[in-house]
Each structure stands twice: as C-alpha cells, then as structure tokens.
Image (cartoon, rainbow, N blue to C red; front, side):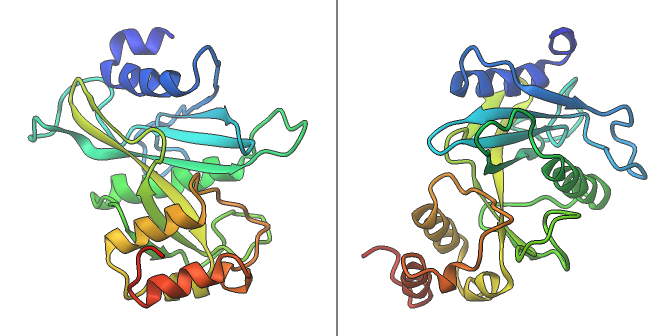
Length: 224
C-alpha cells in the first residue's frame, strides 16, 4: 500500500494485523476528511479483517497514534498510545462488514481527538444511546480491554496498545461499577475471550451460564 511508504506508524499497524491475518487482504475504509473534527470521519482509516472461530469481523482504527511523523513529546508513546478495535459477529455468507461499527469507532475517535482525552484498559462508559446507530439493541454502554490477540506493540514512534471496545447493557455496566480495572478485564475475558459486540444479544445477567460469572466478580472472586 503506497500510504505505508510515507507512514511508518500506519505500516506498523498493518504489520501487526498481518501477523494475525497472514495473506488476508482487509476491507479498508479511508476518510477524505481525516482529522477534521466537524466531520463524521475524522480518523484517517479503519480496516476490517475476517476473524475465525467464531466467525467475526475485526475492525481496527488508524489515527489515534502517530502514523506519519513524531509530533508528541513522549518518545516512548505513539500519539494517544492506543488504537481502537471492535469485533462483531459475521453471519454465514456475509461478505461485507456492517457499517455501524465504522460509525461508532469514528465517533469515539472524534471524542478522543477533540477532547484530547484517551481511553484506557478497564474504561467504562454509558453512551446514552445504542452503541450501534440505527440498530435496535440493548447495548448502550461500552467497556475497553486490551485486544486479546493484537495486544501491544512498539512502533517507530513509540508504544501502541490495541484497545478493544465491547458493547454492554445498562445492567452489565451497573454490575461493573465497583470493579477495578483489573477485575473488569478478567471478567470480560472469562465471559467471552474474543469480546464480540453482538447487537442482538440480551443481558448476560439473564444468561444462566454468564450471570454467575458476573455475580462472582461482584463478590470480588476473580476466578473459581
């Protein structure tokens, strides 16, 4: 890709994804209004990869770290220090990723770029509306955890954590209120290793397999 020749930070993100998805060509959505905060797409690009076991779409942002040159003062951290990811279920025969995660991630990117406030591991937030714009869903909150497979890398401009956004319901968000960041990350990983955001799902607290996990963490018991 020609952009990576002039964008070492971009190339580092590509390389991390290619290690996970060897020989796969991603769906790539570039923005014509990169870094213009008054627009709907301020992040320069989002790539989407086809994950397996279970089948899912894996979205990765470009633009919250330094892609083209070093501009921040910290030599050890690239930009805000993270890029956002999201995983959503991929239906059988579905050959194009859904558009709503692109809108959601661009919206979160606009918040970070505009407020200069980053997200962090274990971060939780009430979105005040559906995580999937235009989709009927109970998921109106989000949780951030390290991407379980991309993790953290050191690029040409410093470290970069791939931070996965996971949609949650209001009662799930309330159940995490007293958990520390470590507890949130452990609980999310135990409930769903891949951390899929499935707009069609109901609350884990109504699921006979997952509700006991949530309650156990509320009691401060990280593992059985």
